[in-house]
Length: 492
Image 1 (cartoon, rainbow, N blue to C red):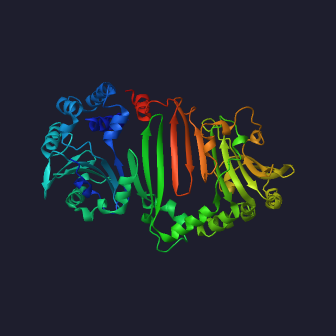
Image 2 (spheres, rainbow, N blue to C red; image 1 turned 90 degrees about the vertical axis):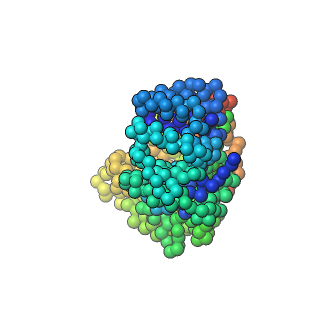
C-alpha cells in the first residue's frame, strides 16, 4: 500500500515543477487501450504547486525514505527539482496496452537524456535497477518487474501481463522507440479524438480488452465478421471544485453492431420522472429508464445466448408475455445499499394478462416438496419462496420475493414493507438532481454519505444512448475534489 501512495504522490509532485509530440510515436498503432494523464494539470488541481506542496514533499520524502533507505541523493533530486530527472513532465504521460494485451506500457517524453541517465546510474548504485545496456540507438535496464528503455526523445516502461522476465520485452521496446508517426497510434483518427476530448485523464479502449468468455455470449449471432476492437469507448475524467466528472462516448465502427444498438435505442424513450415522487429524498440508490418491453424482447431474443437462457429457464415463465406488457418507466431503488440488500423495482404495464404465467407455475412448484412455493396474497399479488435459489439459476441460499401489480405498475421486491410505501416529507423530486431527470434516456443516483461522510452523491445520465455523463459530488463545493481526496486518503 505504501508503494501505491508513493506512486500517486511522486507522479503528481514531479509534474508540478517546446511542445514536442515525437515521443507519442512509440505507442503501438493498434493498441487495445490508450490513456493520457495530464500531470501538470493534476499537480495544479491537487495543490502540489502551492502551499500544500510543502506537506506533500514531506510526505513523499518520508515514504521514499522508508522504502529505499538512505537514498538521499535521488530523493533530494526528485523532491527539490523534478525537472532534473530529464523527463518532460509538463507533457502528457501515456499508458497503453498491447493489441494482444500481453504487455502494458507507460510513456514519458524525454527532455534531457543525460540527466535521466544520471538518475538511472544512481538507482543502479543503490541496486534498484540492473546495469544499463545499449541497443541500436536506445538504452535499457530492468527495474523490478519493469523494463525501462529510452531514446533521445522518449522513455518507455513495459510490464509483462503474464509475469514474464522484463528483459524479454527489450526488442518490443526497441521497435516502439524507432517507430515513425505513420507506424504509430499518433497517426490514427482515434488519437485525434483523444486530443479533442476534455479531461485531466482521457482513456480509449476497445471491447477486446475484456475477457473473451464474458463478451462472447452477448455478441453471438451479431456478425461473423465482428471484431471487438471495432467497438470502443472514449472517456474523459475531470477534477473540478466540489466534484469529478466522467464523460463516455461510444465509438462503434462495426456497422452490424451499430445497427443493433440503433434498434435497442428505438426501444428506449425519454424519461418523465414519474417515480421520483414515490421515493424519499434520502433513498440510497435509484435508477430509471423508459422502455418499450415488446421491442426490447424482440431484439434480445435474436441473440442465441439470451434465447437459450429463456428457453431453458429453471421455471417455465412466459418472459415474452411479461416484456410485452411493459411500456413506460422502469425504476429500481435500494433504501440503504451500504447496510442491506433490500430493493424494489417498478415497471409500468399496459395490461394484466401476463399474470397468468404465474398462475400456471403454481401447481408445478407445489410438487417440489416445500423447497419452493408460489402463493397469492391478494388479487394480482404473490409471494414466492425457495429454500435454494440455485434451483432458479441464482446464488445458492433461501430467497423470499413479493411481486404483483399495484397502481398500474408491476413490482418485485425482497422487502414487503417497501410496497406502496408512502413518502412522508421530501421526495427524490426535491434533490439537487431531480429536475435533470426529465428528458434523459437513463438516469441514476447513489447517495454517498453513508459510504464516505465527506461525499454527497453520484449521478449517471444519458441523453442519447451514445454518451454517458457521471458526476461524483462532494459536500465541500469550493475546494477541488482532488485536493479533498488527497487530504482524506493520503493525509497531506
